[in-house]
Image 1 (cartoon, rainbow, N blue to C red):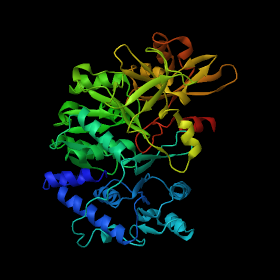
Image 2: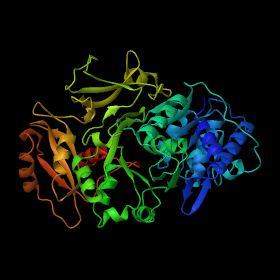
Image 3: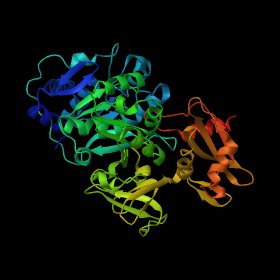
Image 4: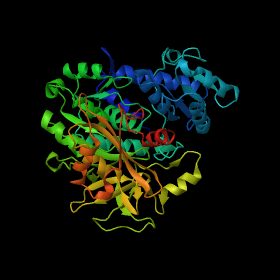
Length: 499
């Protein structure tokens, strides 16, 4: 088994179909597979062996995809790092992953050369480095079939976003990513004529597994942007080029601020959100404005996907992440590991082929991440309803305890999004001498609107228990976000406490 065979198969059946478009430049499946084969052949000539860790730390591009599949074809492991990493962050993760080679950009050369001096890295592939990627993709590789790997061998290592402060590298297998890709294609009813827009970073599970790998599996086309650019996204949509639109909730919020939104979406048939919880109010507004549902699934770096809420559109579970995908088991457990009954909240625990095998070079974190029997502990609080649809209540670590009462930020945020003047919001708990923690709301007003805390407080009191209503309202122009578009509550907390 080798994940790269999905590319080889798509190139066999659809050699002339465009696999990637960057701007106006299409790259066919045959051309992409040839590039990946040349990379693989070059890596093997350089002494790369099956199981070696090869890094990718660069923005989204066709070359990134060719290198990724070239690494896999050679039997090596693709360690995908955020292109936003700089300085000590980059050197720490590259060192921790024990990389042999890395594909990167010239701006990171200084830090990477230091790793070479410390005998951590052997070669840096970038302009000004030991060689450029073009050198790996020149010449005739001849027929090159992906090396056969065991189904449980690691294909890729993705580092978590570090919500606890220390990123961990999730080891994902060839079987696991393959299984995830098939699940996504099935639930989204993907076909080879689909064109998927991707501006989400490939180091993130949403961009790499959900969008890129599932599209390559089904021989669809990826329209690439290195990052989210509203003007360029709208231009692509209005040209009718995109059939599948993938984004995080913050992007949908921005689009809802536009006039003639339905017309601007062109030929989009499917809109999907992940990366963070989608407020129900945003789903409702999107449906009213465009006629499209925003579908969701639930997953994470360590297990992707876990659930979908929409295989049958008539059963689209707004506010729920849906049913477990075929072959994935989900249980709700209490803090002792006991299984909870339907309707009771607890930690979401997952078992299945798509679950990671371990955190790389971190046995202690791996032990803490699993219950006996291979059940992965998600760190999310969830509950099953009477239809066995799963709802995510919140992150365990985001729970606010104020005056002895539990407050889940997501519930308060859902209520805040119903305030017409609110564009974005985030709820956090801050230290309080009287209450232990006080509920604090950070609010971004809609353009031209004004948010009045007293008015908002009265509105929330009509919808929430008094102890859940924020005691403090902080009006801001924007909220800090990760490269994947997730609101960074730890940064909000840190910024406010430092004042």
